[in-house]
Image (cartoon, rainbow, N blue to C red; front, side, top):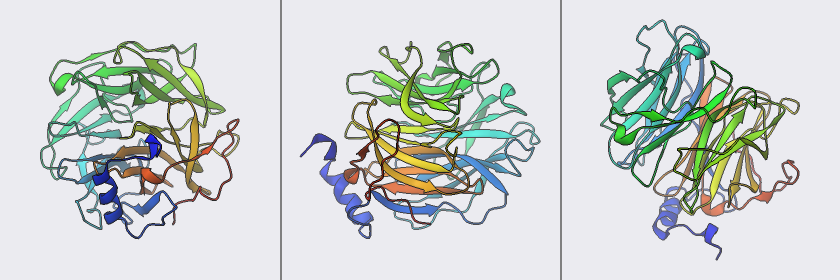
Length: 365
């Protein structure tokens, strides 16, 4: 059996037991809304993490509309073996509660508590990073602090833990062109460091990187492209994120919209993104692709393909092997889709065209 079809036996058994009702040929095991009723009109930029006790924690920003004075950070939990998410709860505000919050990012390191990063500021150029900590799987939050000057933490996507135990946060800024950088947070103590921006505004505009870890130790970052008629950008590091190669285009389109990716337990890479550009629809179609090498991608599934906005995905793989994806659904809800990676094979994407194949099944409404 090919290596990329093999997961640990225990993980496969857990998946089979948990989602016995799923279609044997469809990698999509479940599709659901995290909430259907909420005390806010608009939401965006969801994030997800799994805690050591098996709880799934989700967070997003919500209020009247993006950038409005009442936008704060909200969260919900799905306890292990539970069927329903907890009701949305406001968990994070700005120092001045009339200042909006933005882009939460949950991160659960292998050892230690759960972290919730987010931003505060009246506009993106004024963002300050904020950090909250939970010692009870997201039920309560404490130890709020504003990050040091010139640090905003992970800007949209989750940090990764490196072999030396340090944490690498993918980040970016927009006040001097769209520029990508990376922040090191060793053991989450007070010693912070960061790279310089890896691109300048004259070369290309890129933000919101997501990091993949290759078996040979190299890191690959995929980035949102400011040019909505162009493609996802990529950069590589051979020294644990300290220096990065020049940004270059991939073969995958990007309509100036957020992406996220994860390194799977079997060594493959899974990417969630809008396989469109501004000329072909923008954020109306949301897709899943898989790759063995981070370069050649295969089409797995279409999660959404209709009028409306489906965007800003976040993706993790839980300890039982299941892949969990959260994303913005029409700016009014957050949807979760669960995938079984043992059923993910995919069809080749040739010349950037998403293939028509009966195996590419959309999630159910």
